[in-house]
Image 1 (cartoon, rainbow, N blue to C red):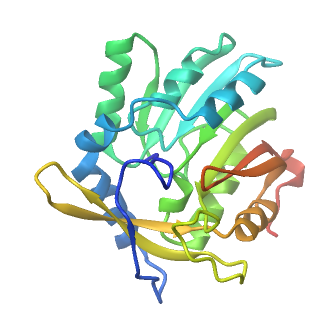
Image 2 (cartoon, helix red, strand yellow):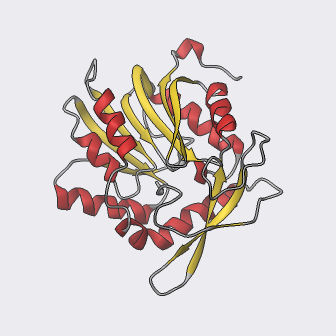
Length: 250
């Protein structure tokens, strides 16, 4: 379900902070939303983000062969980057939307790169512990509809990262000038419209992170924060997986 930058293709955010946390039904609604818009959405997501290209360039020299992971892979534009890393034996793309995965399968076939695609949940990844050497988890975390599920997904990323593995995590941020940050250090839930070619609009759920909140949630997870920054209205963090003995509830 990887989305674009806040100033990219898509529509304006609507007011509508949620007063109650969504449940399982709402997680299914997020999946169904992306199934509904998948073809049009994928057609507007042609190129990888510069931040992801820089991350792969910086961390593509692996200490050992392993698995690459594109979590929330959408149409696999970033899985394609990972597929070009010589020491990655396998690249796995995981997304909740079966229809988006189909667009990724089509892209891989057209462009001639290999990726193993799996419909799955970011909080329960179908991968062994310590299996992943390089991962991209961009523009997906903010679509998970509860704080607890977002935290679980970060812990799950930590579980599958190898001791020397690295991942790039991103989320939309209140630091972008389209949002009204209130200075409390907390984010908010909202919906953002997607407009289909016929004019129909579809609401998409977002949690917009305050930068302090993003950093705090990462630090409370099982991930080790290597560095983080704000870029193009997004929070970005390069993270490592904690050693298994260090994983804990915080």
